[in-house]
Amino acid sequence: MWVAKYLHSFGEEVYELSRIGRKPIDIPSGVKIALDGNKIEISGPKGTLIQNINKNMTVKVEGSVINVTRPNDNKENRSLHGLTRTLIANMVEGVVNGFKKALEVNGVGYRVQKQGKNLVMNLGYSHQVIVSDTEDIKIEVPGPNKIIINGIDKQKVGQFAAEVREKRPPEPYKGKGIKYENEVIKRKEGKVGKGGKK
Image (cartoon, rainbow, N blue to C red; front, side):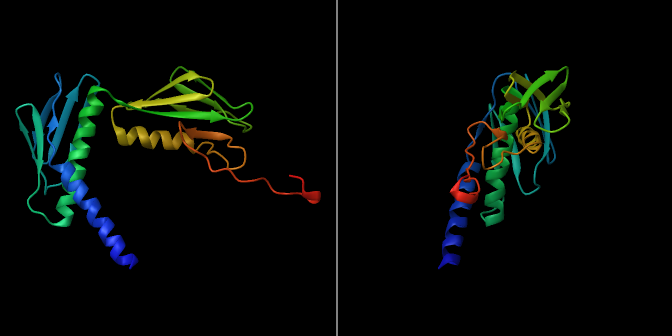
């Protein structure tokens, strides 16, 4: 029963990716697309991104849109179709608007600040934790308890934000630490001591 349910769910996921893959990607004004074999280069106001595309997928610029096509309807190619289309759409979005990931810092005495290119974090350790901007990532600190990670590559922004969060992941009792904005921390009750007091 559960196998059939899993296969049914997997089939729905492949179908959804396949459906997404067929949608053309609009090319905004000011964005340039260069294709070289299996490599696509997309340039816009925010910068340039380059990505190698799976050899099974065909990418064409037709007028003011990008179309991705697949050679056949087998499951692997249907999945690749949707994933490739999503990847290219994210590249276009990135070079036009960029991506950002917001983090919140919670805890008494926990605070962050920007010093030059360095994000300096006081997270309850005996030492400060420092993370620096990179060529691809810029860090903003709009307040002592908020961090915003900016970049044009969605995957790199997400990865960098995850690495910052790991410097002090939120603990489950009081929620102290670094969490994503709008992330809900499942709280645990504190241990009960003698006499039934926590």
